[in-house]
Image 1 (cartoon, rainbow, N blue to C red):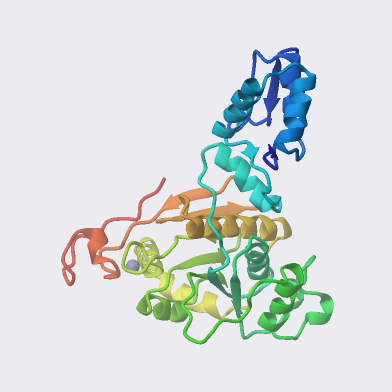
Image 2 (image 1 turned 60 degrees about the horizontal axis):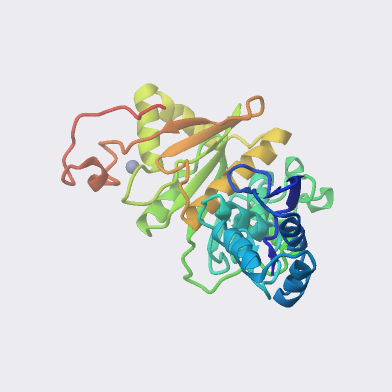
Length: 343
Ligand SMILES: [Zn+2]
């Protein structure tokens, strides 16, 4: 047995030791004898019960006192029983988080994520997901690697001109050898990540809506990267709702949007390319793991100059028709228009 990976034992003063540092998960142990503090120190590395009791005996600590100490650690969630295999840093992190009351994720091995749009940002999201233990990460992009896609650990200068998805799969296999990059035909992804520039292409979205596949847009705009809203078809806001609100705010938006879609992407600012990818990947993992995700019915807009994303709520547009139940009105009726909410 030993103290859980990710935690360390610290001596504070005679009679008091602590396990861990963060107040959300650390355990303070007081009124300990010097011998009990020694026993606690010994649990910082793997030790079997017999050796622990021998040590305790040498420091005049009774077996009953050792058991009380072990039970306190067990209840606090910081004790690993004998024979537990050490996890990787991700597993360790979630074990520590569990001691802070956060539900640890289950296995992600059977999860299937598809990333459509494998530019530098899209590939980085895919890499994070693959390294986080997602079983299958599928890449879809028919275009070729562009010079602005080249980045550390991603596309290399020699990849320019080669198919993005093809090179991307090789990158994924290199960083996460166990990740699946293909799945049997007709496998439904748990979530599709749609990475786009300027505007989100509505054509593939219609297919996702029709086939009832959850999807998350990650949109690179002039000044920010926007993650969300998460679309669960039929259960809330969709990207057409968002577009309808934009048309209400700017009647000529459809004319402009059509032109935006035809302009070549201009890449993403370097730091925003990293922070935007991390933000998106973190939200995707939250959705898959069942934690509360900020992108449920909302978008997060991140710039390169402010580390805190701006959250904006979105509601179903009354004229979209995508989620009648979310509006509380029968399908086919057309209630008065209301604006998308702001937070
Ligand atoms: Zn809608």
